[in-house]
Image (cartoon, rainbow, N blue to C red):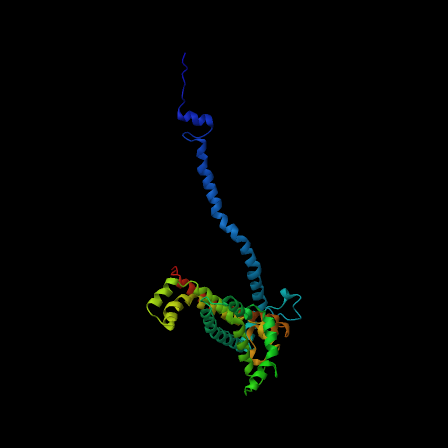
Amino acid sequence: MSETILIPPAGEVGEQSGLPAGKHPAGGRPARKRATRGHEKGRPFWMLLPGGILMLLVIVVPLVVAVVMSTLDLDQYTLQSWLRAPFIGLQNYVEAVTSSSLLRSIGISVSFAVIAAVVTMPIGLAAALATQNTFRGRALIRSLFLIPYVLPAFVVGTLWRTMLQPGGVVDSTLSSAGIHTGLWLNGPLSFWSLILVQIWTSWPFFYLLVLAGLQSVDHEVHEAAALDGATWWIKLRDVILPYLRGPIFLALIIAFLHNINAFTLPFVLFGVPAPVDVDVLPVLTYVTSFQSFRFGLSAAMAICSLVLIAIPLFVYLRAVKLDSGEEEKR
């Protein structure tokens, strides 16, 4: 006898298997995919959490503490219980602007940073152009160019302090040529001595950034310029410099920020109290805090320094945004 096979309706299959009608066990996969997608969607925020905590501890918390300290009458007598120090509001800022040498130090720091960065830029550009093409001993020359930059600022300051002493190497060399300059580390020449040492130690930074920018110039562009018979000046002006605009601008901004924050080099080169012509803002803040013990006043000076640094940083970020073609959302 032949057996009759009964096939239940689709609804009954779903009821017997515990699944909705018309669904199969494989139908659970879309739900798992949706859950996985939701988990992956929130994953970047969890990955940013360690960096966010580190920034909070290293940047935000010290900044808040500095702002609070700048509003307190904090000195050597109230330092141990600084949370109970008298609150004086903006009085430290008013004193820093009107009764201290803050404005003069800002002028010295800005002029020093601008002059050193602008003079250093063509030196680094010339060195990068000179070592761009392959020649025998290029690796050795490039390594020697980096020596001033990799030396610690303390070593550079000590070396040049010894060389610029009265009767030192610099004085002896110039005297043999009939040039008598006077004191390098005190008086009007101290400002230019600081600029000279800063140029010597920071020009390899421009060299590195410009050399990296030169690698982005297409080889076909060089060939096209050579076929057109372009001279080296036209090639530099119309072919190479447009490619280097971004690296040069970035190097200028970073060099300015580095120079305006320079503390170790002027501190080692001139000591404290520094000559009036090289009383840069970081050294003034240090002297106010750790020699005069006016911690609230020095915190106000540090906040002013932060504002001064934020201006060129904002200009750079704005320029990068415009250069990338992004428009500001209105």
